[in-house]
Length: 199
Image (cartoon, rainbow, N blue to C red; front, side, top):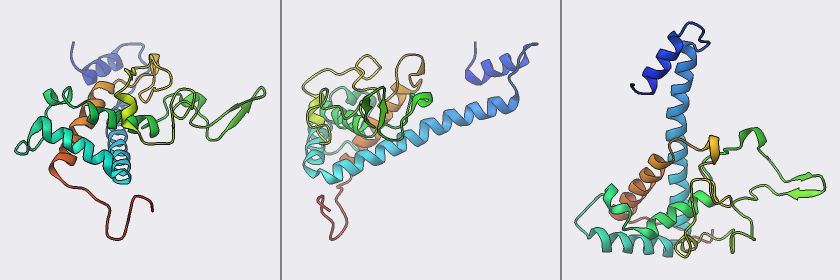
């Protein structure tokens, strides 16, 4: 048994192993980088969207105050299931600003024409056949329907799907809800002097 590091070291010590200590170091750095950079950038995008849409932030804050009250300062794991709008805000941000590209070998950097068919960049998350007003930040779309985030609904795969699904999906989603909920419940956020959502 053991943790990931124990297993990697055990594999490295096997007689015919091609795994080196450097390989293990790189793998562990990938784990940490993937888990921190993607979460922090998603949180940053979420705050950006909420600051550009103050009515959505007010709605999320009202839900938090109703569920947590004014005295409780941080969101707990047990609170997340009682905060559907907060979860919808996180999901909508993941739809509009996926944290990473999970189809790396087949990644598009621009619109591509393939066998006479235009494959637009961001086609999955912004497909108007799947999403009504896809360019609009609308967490409410996740309240009206149950959309699977683990690779079953191919219009929404922020964590990838199949063999390439993010192993940290559950932890990342939970942490995003905890951090965002605490940040917008404890602090009042607004754009700086002279700025408005329009500019």
